[in-house]
Image (tube, rainbow, N blue to C red; front, top):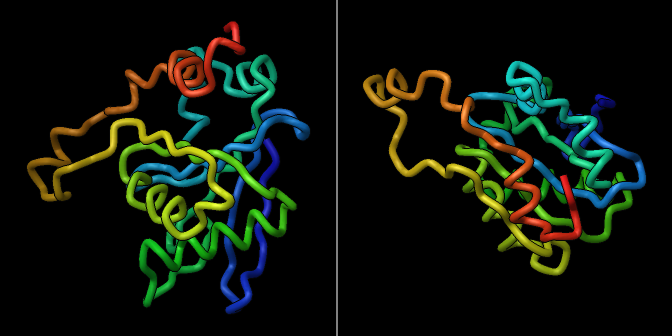
Length: 166
């Protein structure tokens, strides 16, 4: 994994991490709520080596911290679409002309926003466990360790077809 930040055109900082091979097929990853670009490292707790899996499938995941999470600067006027613009700046910076988006839970609305705003760049969107209930005390308490059932091997296989034999 490689971590870095970029300075956005409005002066804010956007943090990201890149997992997998440098030459892999790029996938933009939007983490759940609350979380960060490091969310994929949780898979190590379930005996799944994300780096090994991504190298086997030749996929490069770019995980982005949303504004106010991880190391990214908070945007008090931020919206789903403004974050889509932030992520697009990152793609331009990384010289990525088109990619897919994969998201977990609270990353869903952000994934849909970038797909809507930049349909010429985003080829497809995969939403895993997109949430539909608001975050209130009783619901958050029920969530617990909700990532235990994230089976990344099956997600990658279903999203990117049979060409990846895991």
